[in-house]
Image (tube, rainbow, N blue to C red; front, top):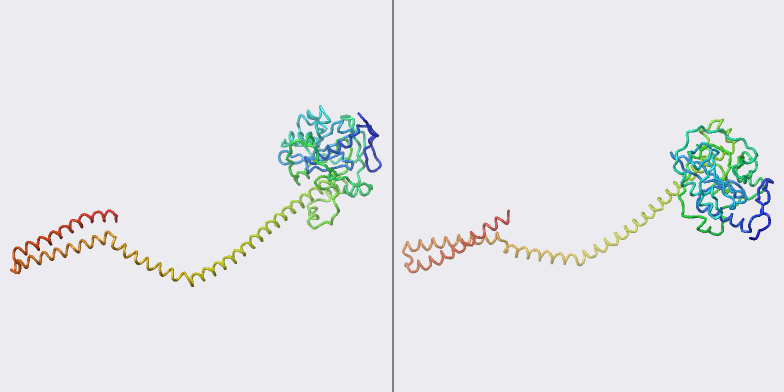
Length: 408
């Protein structure tokens, strides 16, 4: 195995770690692991200037969010990363009393395991656990002291500069913060594993999280605002931002001016509130654009309706009247034909015809009695008329019940 020149971890403010010799691809492998973490957790925040400390939010029950602080020692990935949560928040077999997370994969660390996979397993294993009802400890005083003996690679952090946001501190030190966009190539799949859902940050949970010392036992500079700890360009304070301070007492304001963690919590709360308002405005603008599009479509339909109405008027003035007249004539003819085919019409005709035949037979009988007809003439005429009369009467008697049934 070939070894490169001693690897020195850069650090602002004049601090640097001791020089170590690592394999030639150590820096490249380390950067790939960092890129894999940022790709797996897009909302992860970079909290140090040398890309060795990150923060991922963990959602606990009931809805509280606490940060998982990730520290990458200089030899990483030859040595395991350090994952910690605030002390006294969780009770789990992975969480040590000092807040350090030690699961099976961290205890049996393998450089090929992948940083993103380790963090994802920790988040999935601890997510949704109930928080311990403990009092919020006071903010620690910034200090530089020896690292705890839990791991040989706990690097010190630069001294804290009060009242300066991370970007201002970097500018004061003459250092440019690295950006997650420096990952020019996509990390390999073995670093990422299956994607894991990262819960959105909660403003109330962010303010409720107690400030704790870092895993190295020293005060850490506050992470930069933004989704991944990227330094943001300064902007002017708005009335909405200032209104966030209205409910704070003088003691709270004084603590914000002297405590980095309190200042960071306030900035995070303001940013989350602004982000929620921005998302609401974007949704409103999108809905307004859809309404405008529907209104334009309705106006186009109005024009089409007018054109169709004009065509209908032209047709009605030319062809429609003649076609309507022909249609009415055919309807009248149909009505006349149906009148002759109606069973009730047939029944009435049979009744009238039988009545007339009965009257004729009575006249012939009267003529015979008066001596106007001979007996031969009388018999012949009377029998013929009575035969027709009984035939039609029989037909009427047969049809009438059927018509009554149909009408019922």
